[in-house]
Every structure is written in structure tokens, then in C-alpha cells.
Image (cartoon, rainbow, N blue to C red; front, side, top):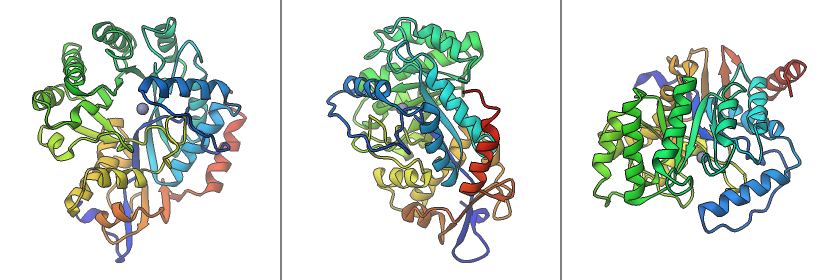
Length: 371
Ligand SMILES: [Zn+2]
């Protein structure tokens, strides 16, 4: 990381804030009583379980999202991209709930919301219209999900997603779980479409598990196509799911960001909302060995994510005296990634953030926020 992250004492380390580039605050049970999960064999089981959990939930989206986002802020996250469900089954209430939670944390956390058609875009009648409407009710980006396996066709799905993006002047962020040559072909189609629309640098693909199999003959040409189109890959280093070879993606010029994905929701009992924990998991899952490998994970969780989200408080970090910074007890970045301590303090605009500061802000806001 160079000298700028080395603090004056041996063990105090100042770092830029962290960026969670892919999280689902509307699904979380954070702050709510424990929820036991149902078994799931397929992606479609997880989605069905999630819908059932959402319809059964008694706590509001805003309160659950706020609890998790506050936890993230106190652990040094300064910006996040939230994928929030939109669909005919739930309408736009999740968008409204997460946007209200974000407004309560506004001075401390930049929140981008992706309108995420998890329950289908074309296969779920009414959802295209709801995604379009959500873009003027708190959502910033247009989301998508596995065009081929979950939404009934590659070109129809991309037409809808990129059509909405063009009509509303928004960026795109698509979930793609599909693996193998089918997954790679969809990635190349997304890259091609991005180029055709002149949207280089404005499209992200989440997970992109197809990029994680080095034996796939089309892997390298696909990485080159993604790099040419400036596509970002958001990885989450999740449990049993594959993770990409970070050095390989970097050598092809593909930008990578890191996110939590679901935290304590129907999809997973795991997750903490801390990007310090998440970069540790990225290092662990990618077999990081050298300080350089560990520092790469740190950069993905900070500077890279800030590049994707345009998070200026993170980008402006210039060492220990910076107005926006996180302080840890750690001798080096590499040690920080391995030890994953809680921050000693999180500083925003020169002021230390505490539970009290956040709560005061929240109650001051609650009279003006529409619910
Ligand atoms: Zn996700």
C-alpha cells in the first residue's frame, strides 16, 4: 500500500473507509430474532425460500436494513451498493424501506440502490413496470438476474435491462450465477451489449461464477471482452461458491470489487456486514499467501470499490490525518486482513462515529423521513 497507510506509532494503522459493492439489506434478519433456514438444493429453492421469508416477516424492511447498515458503518464501511428486490409479489416496499434507512445514515454512508428483479423480470408480469417506477422512487441502477436460466432468454432479458437503463440514463448491475460455457457466453453477450450501448465502465456483473473455472477454454477471451467493455465484477467470497483467480482477472485488466451479498437472511445464516471480515474471507478463499496477495484483497475492499461507486470520502484518503478514515490496531495492511480486528475508531469529516452519533442523527431525521 505504500507509506500513506502507515501510522505514526507501530500498531495504529489508518486506512481509507471500506466499500461494500454488493449487499442485500432488504433481506437481512439483522437485529431481528433468529430465523432457522430451510434446506435448498437449487438456486430456485433459495429464491422461493427468500420470498416466503419476506412475505412472513413481521419486522419492517426499513428497521432491518437500518440495523445492518448501521453495523456496517460502525465497522468502517463508507459506501455500499444495495441490491433491493422489486417484483409484483412485493411491489416497491423494499426500495422504499432501504431508501428510508439510507436517509437516516446519509452523512455517514453513501448508498446506491439497484432495483433487483430477483423473482424474474420478463417471467414475472408487471415487474418491468415496477423496476421503471422504482427508478424515480429511490432506486439508482437497473438490476438483472441470470438471463438464460432464470428469466427465459438472453436477448429478451438484456433488451429489457439495457432498455430501462437507456430510457432512464442509469447504470446496470446484473447477478449471474450460471457457470460453464453458458455462463461465459452470457458474460460475452453482456460485454457486447455494453459496447453497443456505449456504456463502458457503467456495467457490473455480480458473482460471475463462470469466471472461476480456469479449465474453461473460453475463459481468457471472455476476460478480454469484459476488460474491453469496462465491466466490473463484484465477488463476495461466499461459503461453498467459487471465487475468481484475482491475479488472472487483474492480468486481463478486469476490475474487481467486493461485497457481502446476503447477511443473515433466508439465503445464508452467515455474514456480519463488516468489510474487514469480508476481505479476510476473500484472502482466505483465494489462498492469499504473500503480503502482496493480502494487500490486493484490501485494495479490492477499499479503493477498487470506491472507484466503482465513485465514493469520494474513500478516494480522498491520504494518510493518518485524513478527515475520513478508519483506525485499527495492526502493524500492517497484511496483518489487518488476517487479524480482522474491529476498528478502534471510524472518523467521518474529522468526527468519531459512535452508536450515539448515529442514533442522534437517526432520531433527528425520523421526523422528516417519509415512511
Ligand atoms: Zn446478490
